[in-house]
Amino acid sequence: MLKNAIWITGAEGRLGSALVELLKKDVDNKVVGTDMDVDITDMEAVEQYMKVYRPNIVINCASISDVQYCEQNMVQAFKVNALGARNLAAASRSANAKIIQLSTDDVFSGKAAGQLTEFDVPDPESVYGKSKYAGENYVKELNPKHLIVRSSWVYGAANESAKEDYFSYVVNHGKSHTPFQAPLDRIGSPTGADVLAGFIRCMLDKAEYGIYHASCEGMCSRHEFATAILALMGYDTELAKGYFSVENRGRISILLENLMMKMTEIYVMPQWFDELKAYIEKNKESV
Ligand SMILES: NC(=O)c1ccc[n+]([C@@H]2O[C@H](COP(=O)([O-])OP(=O)(O)OC[C@H]3O[C@@H](n4cnc5c(N)ncnc54)[C@H](OP(=O)(O)O)[C@@H]3O)[C@@H](O)[C@H]2O)c1
Image (tube, rainbow, N blue to C red):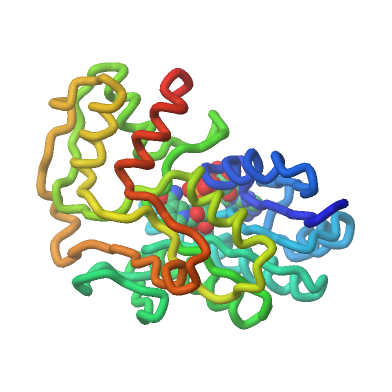
C-alpha cells in the first residue's frame, strides 16, 4: 500500500540525490525528484506540479548553496532560497502536505562561542545565511506542517554530476597530488549526505514539527577534515597545507547542537570521523 507520495526538489544536488536514492528503496513510497526542470521560483510551475503529482510530503533541497556566489548574486540567492521556499510552503499548505525545508548553520554568524541549539536566535551575516533564514521564516509562517532541518558541511552526493563539495575537492587534489590550502581556524561538523538523508527518512511519518539541527557529532577544522580524508583514501596528508584564514577573523565557529534530536530520542547522529570512515569504506572505488 502506498505510504507517501514524496516530491524532492534539488534532486540533482548533493543531498537531493542521496535522498532520492535512499527513499526510492522503500517500495511503499512514491518518490519524484525535480531540479531545474521545475523552477521553484516560478509559483505557477510549483502549483501546477503540486496539482498533477499530489504529494503528501515536499522536501525542499533546491538551493543556491555557494556562499561566494550568493555574496555576488544577492537577487538570485534570495529568489531561490527565500521566494522558492515561500512558493513551496504556500503550495504544500494548499494541498495539506507536509514540507521539510533544508537549511544551514549559516543562519548563525559564528560569533557566539559554544554550541547553538534550535532555541538560539539566528543572526546571519552572509547573503547565503540571510536568504536561507528568510526561507525558514516563510516556511514557518505559511505551512504549520513544517519541519526545518539545519545541517553543516554536507558531503557525499549520490549524483556524480552534483557540484564539487569539499570532500571531492580534497579527493581531486589527492588524486592529482596537488597541494592545497586548508584553513586551521574554520571549525565545523562535517556531515555525510547519507546519514542526513537517513534522519529525514526517519522523520517522514512522525508527527514532529519545528526546527531540528542535524549535524554529525564532534567538530574539526577544515584542515583536520582534509587530512582525515587524505589519510583514509591513502593519499599524502602533507598535501593539505594548514593556514590561518583572514576571512575568519572574528568568526569563532558554528557548531550545531542536535538538541531536539536528543530530547525526542528520534535519531542519533554519528561522530563525524566514524561517518567519514564508513562513507569512504563504502564508496572508495567510486569517489
Ligand atoms: N552543502 C552543504 O554543505 C550544506 C550545509 C548545510 C545545509 N545545506 C542545505 O542543504 C540543502 C541541499 O544542499 P546541497 O548541498 O545538496 O545543494 P546543491 O548540491 O547545490 O543542490 C541544490 C540543487 O538545487 C538546484 N536549484 C538551484 N536553483 C533552483 C531552482 N530555482 N529551482 C529548482 N532547483 C534549483 C541546483 O541546480 P544548479 O546546480 O543548476 O544550481 C542544485 O541541483 C540546501 O537547502 C542547503 O542550504 C547544505
